[in-house]
Image 1 (cartoon, protein in one colour):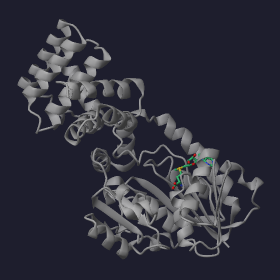
Image 2 (cartoon, protein in one colour; image 1 turned 60 degrees about the vertical axis):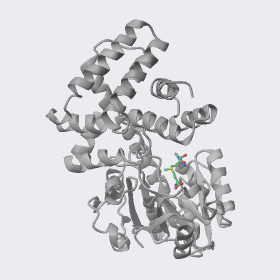
Image 3 (spheres, helix red, strand yellow; image 1 turned 135 degrees about the vertical axis):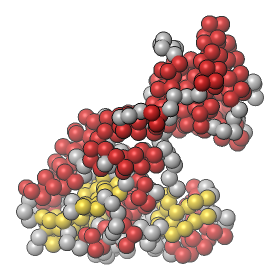
Length: 447
Ligand SMILES: C[S@@+](CC[C@H](N)C(=O)[O-])C[C@H]1O[C@@H](n2cnc3c(N)ncnc32)[C@H](O)[C@@H]1O
């Protein structure tokens, strides 16, 4: 490899992802393939790119302390990535980072910019980075310590309190362990765990779902069990939704917003592939994907099609379904872990406009539920406007629905004491069980 190539490549990638809107994992994978980096270099490049993006707001705050003028994109990312290595990576010596950064600046720019890079990095090495614990405003401090947009931190503090907001932002910076769901028609959880252990994986059972296994070590995507569809990758909170739908063999069930189909296939498994499961998605391509996933798992009761869930009364009569899952489109504030840059692209406006779509979806699918039928409303977000408030507003308008009196009792033991459990549903915070953030509630239509 050419000298400095790895750090120079990191700067190119950061500039394309951070300033030109490129997809981080796609660009990174493509670059690693094209350059033929070995596993050690791939590890360091990934660490620098993902780490710099994950801590962008923190590093930009540091940069403002050292440089007041506007820099070209590459020069800014060169300094931010050098800061990241000096701030967070103990195994990389500062002098090597400074030396290589100055050389890269010489190659890419003129002498002036190389001396600026040299001066800034030596200054940072000498003085250290500004102390974040001196910041008085809690939202500002959490925002800069964990690199979350300030509007989001303020919203979470006002909704859940400072401690929960701080813990949530901190855990979002840490990748979650991968979990899989076993396909019970093909293998039991014990058998799957035994097989994975015999192949060198480190696994443990999920405390939230009887079909769930947490993979602590080993690449599950290369395992025989995954390649033969005996396990599928799914977050434990998503498994909880499929489980809480409480569908059994022979029922007629609706999954109103189903793609890519992780919960659809789970529900079909709990129905032992007997009955009927209608799965819709707004996008035809995505609905096709659900059908393909169903076929792959030989779950013949699933019938997937394109439809706007707000218009399903055109296809199905009122009171047609024993169970409904409305896993609504949402702002995705619960799924920020392991995605370094996605949090910067969210906005408060997204939250508010999605809340109104969610209310509409619930309003339109609810009449399709039979009396005594159960409806699970879920999202992968952490925000009261999209979760509890949607549920409360719906219940105020519909006296024939209530939160299922058995909802709390039916939750897995480990979840019963979750701090986000209220009379309007369960808000799982990502720090509670080392999962994604997720919301769900089960409503029942009174008989
Ligand atoms: C949270 S995702 C569903 C995830 C899915 N339940 C699973 O577990 O794999 C929400 C889905 O709703 C779809 N969607 C958005 N608006 C919709 C609408 N009006 N009607 C039906 N589907 C919609 C999106 O295309 C997206 O695939």
